[in-house]
Image (cartoon, rainbow, N blue to C red):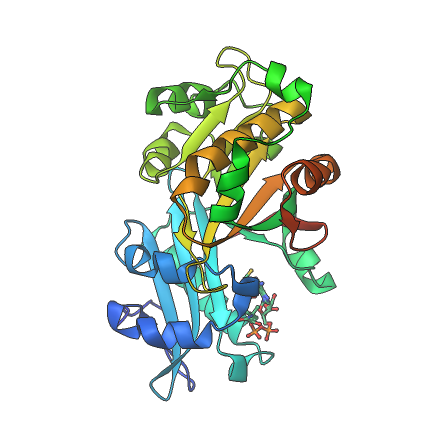
Length: 324
Ligand SMILES: CC(C)(COP(=O)(O)OP(=O)(O)OC[C@H]1O[C@@H](n2cnc3c(N)ncnc32)[C@H](O)[C@@H]1OP(=O)(O)O)[C@@H](O)C(=O)NCCC(=O)NCCS
């Protein structure tokens, strides 16, 4: 779909920029082969993304073929443009296409949403020296990637030999939409001090704790938990399972963890897994994003107590920001 002319920005050179539509889906899948180690979320989001309010999915085309994709999502009361889904066709990588696409999309955002002040993005790859100059590092979370077979784990879930500290904990609280507003979103919300840089990162998307982000988050089918509604020490947010390209019938769960009380984190992880695992048909990749110091004790718990497979060693998720 054609993009309107932006004053002072010619669509020249051998690259053309258009808005994504349903008909480019297969082409995008074919340039996305193997990315994010099989954890790519775009195939399951693409069709909703292209119709989502305040989101633009821009394609770079060359000779009529898709060679790149980038999405910009306007959040935080219209102040933040969130860069997501970036990818370039394998045969065009390393030639600066990602940079050209980003610069075009930033101009498009400024043209359509003059209120945007900052660009934000989350990444898990090491930044070059040039990129470290370009962005401010806002927060860092550890990434723990686990793998298991759902039917096999479901059959063991009820007979796990859990540490006494977990069984002694009061049960965690599953939040209602109203609780979510109180705990996370109201100014001075209870969790304010637990969130890294007061930013709630949910499945790679960083949201400031603003009431206007509340509806947006509630549109997703998430499980929100805290240990205690009055004085929360730990909060977790778990996505509904969704299919990923890692294998046939392979599903993905993303769990964001805020707070460092180990037993509470373990207990909430178990609750999320008990809710979802019995519904899943085959292999699962479960990715936890947590305070860096929690990585080792949680990796030990997941492998030795839960018997899950550690898919990779310690890596980090970075939240980056630059002025627009
Ligand atoms: C990462 C990827 C998009 C880079 O595309 P590319 O066209 O080969 O990029 P180049 O190496 O030529 O780098 C050019 C620009 O892209 C930017 N860039 C590279 N990787 C980036 C990333 N992961 N996120 C944001 N920007 C990135 C660079 O900062 C540089 O910007 P500049 O021109 O303003 O200096 C491409 O290798 C790819 O599709 N990889 C697989 C998917 C993937 O890993 N996506 C990253 C999502 S976090």
